[in-house]
Amino acid sequence: MAIRDIISGESVKAVFIDDLQIGYMITVRDNIPLGHKFALRDIGKGSTVIKYCRPIGYALVDISTGSHVHIHNIRSLRWGTRRVQREMI
Amino acid sequence: MVATKYVVRAYERPNGDLGIRNHVLIIPVDDPSGTLASNITKILSGTKAIPHPYGRLQFGKDLEVLFDTLIGYGSNPNVAASIVIGLDSSWSNKVADKIAKTGKPVEAFGIEGYGDLRTLERAARKAKEYVQFASELRRTEVDLSGFTFSIKCGESDTTSGIAANPALGYVTDKLYDLGNTILFGETSELTGAEDVVAERIPNPALKEKFLKIYRDYISIIESSGLDLLGSQPTEGNIRGGISTIEEKALGTIQKLGSRPIACVLDYLENVPKGGGGQLCFLNSPSASAEFVTFATAKGSVLNFFTTGQGNIVGNPISPVIKVTANPKTAKNMEEHIDVDISDLLQLKVSLMEAGERILNYSLRVMNGRLTSNEVMVHEEFSPIKLHITA
Image (cartoon, rainbow over the protein chains, first blue to last red):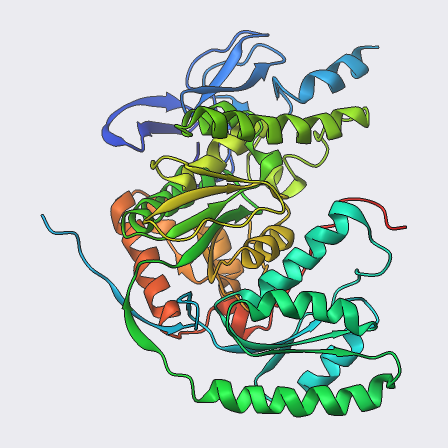
């Protein structure tokens, strides 16, 4: 999650809030507003998106490392499904 | 290591309940009586009214929840005395008789047969007496123990889940360990983390009770052929970067800290008294004003409220402390924010330091410092409505 506004192409360090010593560099591929998320690794279409060590949804398309992750490319595993089904009809 | 003791100056009510404010409350039982209730506050200082749009031709559990809420307000330890006004005096008496069980002064009035003006005079004379009575009540030094608080987040964004709520979770644990009651709820917003909450309930029967409340709620949504995707997460949540209800829920529950949940309450159940710290689930709406109103009716004397994008909610009798970790909100909506912990998000302070800042601020509020919502007269009173009126 971006703790400030990040510009596409910036290289930033990703750390864990529990232990700031553990982390690695990522090149961000989109503009990421403060509070928004980007992928820490490639996420294949249909696979689960993990945050807080738990699934928060699944990928609607392939998402590459550093890309913005939000409602345009992930969906809830709970309440989103029904709507996706409707959209597909 | 001896745990730090905290001393606050509070109002001890006749039944032993501890309050941090000393209001004289004018409670209208129904919607038309709200005008008279508000009029009393215009001619007498030191009074608060809670007008609302309900109370006539409600039935069943819906009516019981409204009565329970009104009784809860009069009984709240932040209230010194109350006046109950209804069109029909027998309904006023029903509410007043329950409030009287707290040992606090309360008087009921009916408008029928008298009209507004004569009722205004009778009720205002009694209210004046109560204000002068309340003005002589004094705060006494007590340990920070045996109080009831609530925790809630609103207009959340990802800064809530990652920083503000974990910092509030630290405060929750601390208040629990000191022997206080902490109320949480927001049934719909637990979706995606309801199993995590269930795992925190050691008693199997209570765990099943919680899951049943949750499932019943979801079945109401699903029976309408809908999901809450359009409203949960909200537009504000989405602007702030929250993408799904699961992400919102996992952020929401960070404020629950880490202690066991030994109390699960449906709408009409009261918070158990005594016996040290407790963390209680309330079956309740996630809407901010409705939750704070409901928690106050259940006895909360102070509400801890984290916000990401900037929520402005308040309450007439129970202060709301707004906490944000979002630096933009701390700046843009500064007048609504009581505690700014955006330096936690920027990794400049630890979670413990941020939590201690919230706790220390809350001690000042308990001792009498006014919150932003109190000064800005944000006094939302939003009782729950369960179903259609007759």
